[in-house]
Each structure stands twice: as C-alpha cells, then as structure tokens.
Amino acid sequence: MQHIRVPAFGKVNLRLDVLARRADGYHELRTIFQSISLHDNLFVQRTRTPSIELNVLGDPLLAASSARENLVYHAADAFLSKSKTRGGVSITLEKRVPAGRGLGGGSSDAAATLAALLRLTRARVPFEKLLELASGLGADVPFFLFGGRALGTSRGDEIYPLPDGPRRALLVVSPRAIAVNTREAYGWLDRELTKNTGNSRLWSFCALCWSPQEDHLSNDFEKVVFRRHPRLARIHRDLLRGGAAEAALAGSGSAVFGVFQNPAQARRSARLFPEDQVFLCSTLTRGVYARRLWGSAGGPSAFEIAVAR
Image (cartoon, rainbow, N blue to C red; front, side):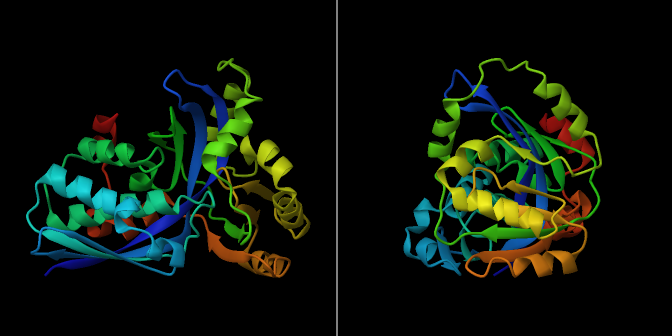
C-alpha cells in the first residue's frame, strides 16, 4: 500500500501576550509563532482494513498510553471521517520534540498527520475545511499547517503569516524534572491579568509583528512560571550569560530557549546544562517548512489562505 514520511516541526513563541479571559472560558491571545528545525517524524501508510493503528517510538510514556488519547489518532480519525476515505491507516510516530514542554510537539504531530493524509489520499478537502479540522484538534494546530513566522490571534487559532525573520541558531533547554501544566499556568496568570484588552501593549505588539528582527522576545507566562519554578529562571539567566542575544520561556514551559548569533556559540552554551535535555536547532522559513511538510505541493497557496480567513 502507499506510504509517506513527513516531519512534524516544533515551535517557539517569539512573543506571547495573554490579554484576558474570554466569555467562552478561553483566553484572548496575541502571539508570534516561529517554526524550528527540531522535529518528530511520522511514517504513514494506507491500509485496506478500516482502522487506525498508531505506534509511538522515542517516548515511553506516550508509547504506554492508549493510542486513542493521542492527537495523531484524533487527527487521522477526523480526516478519514471528513474525507470519507476508504480503508484505514497505519502510523508510526518517532518522537524527538519533548512532550509537555511548550514546543508544540503534539499539535505539530496532529497537523503533520492531516498534511500526510491529504497528500497520501489526494482527497478533495478544501483548505478551509482542513483548517476547521485543525482548529477542532487544538488551538495552535492551525499554525502548523503554515509554519514559518506567523501571528496568532483569538485563542491562537487565527493565523496570519508574517514576513520571515533572519535565520537564527537556537538552543532549547528542556529540564527533565520539571513539567508545567498549561491549565494551571493559565490559572496562575488569571490572578494578575488586566481586563482591559485595549492597553498600550497592543501597539508595541503590532509594531513587532512587522519587524524582521527577533530580538524582542516576551512571554507573559514567565513571571508566574519562574516564580513557581526558580530553576527555569536560572536556565533563562544562564542562557543569557552563555552568549544568547535573547532568551524566553517556550509557551507555558517548561522548555526555555536562547537565540544565538551562530551555531558554534549555541553549542558552547549547551555545556552549561549537563543535567538537562538540550537541542541545537534553528528557525525555519515558511518556504522551507512548506517544502518539507507538503512536498512538491508547496503548502497552502495565498488564495487558499485568503479564502480560509
């Protein structure tokens, strides 16, 4: 049967502003997503049996959990149901992006599953419908259909591609013993949020969106997460002392990343964290991302993006 291999790239947030809790219980966000070269791999094969088989490698906890709890399974199920594709699919997920660290690994895996199945089955699923499927799987899943550098608004699920910044070397530090629950992190932040969504931060945020520079990292979660996990604050400080131009928490954590002028500098800084997982990687442009994820299809066209909005 037909088969395909696709990468599922991680992300960092160059900026993450949490403005207020919305009436629907979610939070109003303004964030700048940036794809990074650190990635999982998905090996997807069509089968004649109408079932979904999922095998996870590289993460014992995910491998031991039920396949039906994995976003990859949910993505495959949603796509097969929506496209009315006959038969089933067998998927092997090779994990490298650490789970639960704010790097978007699970969401990226789900988006990569949708892209792989669209390429593999050649089903006629309009891009706006694919975006609906992605949004139903998780707030940041739609971003991973685009990649590169992008603005995320609303819950983070309204995506507006931005001009790519210069390629940067990154060092991602993932502490093995610290995990941050995203729901708890939002709860910590709720106690300090202003209800005024029209504050002056929006003006500086808009200016940053259209700037090609990446030297103004900011994350609203840092204050509350660092207070409860001082070790993460020390990692942030050590990255700066190790030569990073800027450093920030990835999402709600617990990974912290630094931006360096070159890979050699990042590699030297990695020696400062012998007890942690460290990943040397780089930022990805939208073009490179699209070619790797979508192959010769090249990703969504400008017309499809406009229609999807």
